Amino acid sequence: MKTDPKNDLPPYFNIDPDTALGTLGGPFETEGFARIAQACEAGRRDLAGRGLEEDGRRQLRLFSTWEITRYLIPVAVGHFRRVLKQNPELPQGRSETEGGAKWFTLDEVLRLRAHFAAEGSKAKNYKPWRPEGLPAKMVAVANFKGGVGKTSTCAHLAMSAALDGYKVLVIDLDSQGSMTSIFGGKVEDEWQTVFPLLARHYGQHLRTENQRRLDRGEAPIPLDDTLTEALDTQAQRLVQKTHWPNIDLIGAQLNLYWAEFQIPVWRMQARGWKLWDALTESLEADGLLDDYDVIFLDTPPALGYLTINGLAAADILLVPLGASFLEFDSTGRFFDMLHSTFSSIEEAENMAARALGREGLSFQWDAVRAVITRYDGTQQAELAALMQAYLGPVLSPHRQDYTALIGQAGEQVRGIYEADYRDFNRETYARGRETFDATYAALKQLLLGSWRRDEQMAEAAE
Ligand SMILES: Nc1ncnc2c1ncn2[C@@H]1O[C@H](COP(=O)(O)OP(=O)(O)OP(=O)(O)O)[C@@H](O)[C@H]1O
Ligand SMILES: [Mg+2]
Image (cartoon, rainbow, N blue to C red):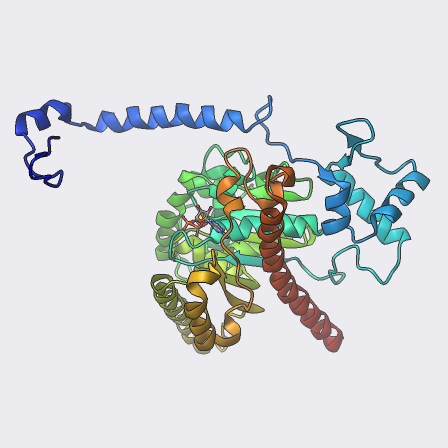
């Protein structure tokens, strides 16, 4: 591209068509996409390989005595060391240098915490609270606006809940699979995602429905191969271990997007199928709500069927958004869409229910909170205050700061909790960690409050 040096013209003047043709290359055909995809795949494998262990698995870093006593098990360092010395059967950690700091795996930290919880002061809550006999809480993170921090928030919350001692399941409902790659998941096709659970739920509905059809003398709707296969699926088969000892994953990959086409077809076929119950009822039926303490759902930037399923399954809904006009505006429209989507489902159901003299449907969540993410106090304080004034208690008062730690963490590390604090300036680390710890504290407040409410209601019912 030539510019006229004399007139210092902008670069889009004086482009010579012949030169342009010379740099253009031949026409592009469909096959070209395959070549690009192959190149990407090769590059992706190379990049992934650099952050992975020999066997292709991610490995979680170790935790130091300083970090454990500061963030995970609230005891004085001296006391911690004494307890370890007195109990040689407990994990003793390992040091990189003679007499250097001791480092522990998270598994070891969890064992140490169990010891302190059993032997230590009852006044300190070493273990996070969960009422006995009540199901896991499901937390969905959603917003139809892209890039607002859904996955980052969801992943960090899952990690902080795990560090806090909860048993966590992460479900990726986004066919982009970002959450899956953060947790090193391997997903071949849609059969290793939530898809078969949704298909099973529909298949079961169809079987019951077909019995009724037969009773009425009507022809049954045939179950195709997909549905027949799905009927044998157990949720446990879809769950993968991750490099975190107490975080498991149901992953996603591109094929999960197929669900967005398949679900409406099923729904057309059997109007009575309650698609919004598919995820919760499947997880409940297979006992996952007892196996875990908290289940996190990451959703795609769209209000499709998968998101609706996730939102309907959730007890707590978090809606991340940046303190910018555009994100505030589009989040407002997201809430409007939620209203029209769920109220139209309720209306249709309640019309049918009234006709049959049955109880109606009314969706309910323990809590719904908007959360400001990537907050920059020097630029956004005014807008954030305005948003707070309009949204009131629906906007979580804690603002998740923008932190260089997330961007800086590079290919190997996928978030603050996986980063080794020695790689950062201590001040930067402490601030970055504090803001995500506070995001978790705000969620834990909702979690414990809603568990307590359930507990009281269960007691009152007895
Ligand atoms: N607190 C933060 N500080 C700095 N960067 C952040 C923070 N939270 C998120 N980001 C960055 O913002 C970008 C978008 O975040 P993320 O992928 O979590 O959004 P998302 O809503 O899940 O996107 P999508 O809609 O595509 O699923 C990422 O590059 C992420 O690293
Ligand atoms: Mg995302």
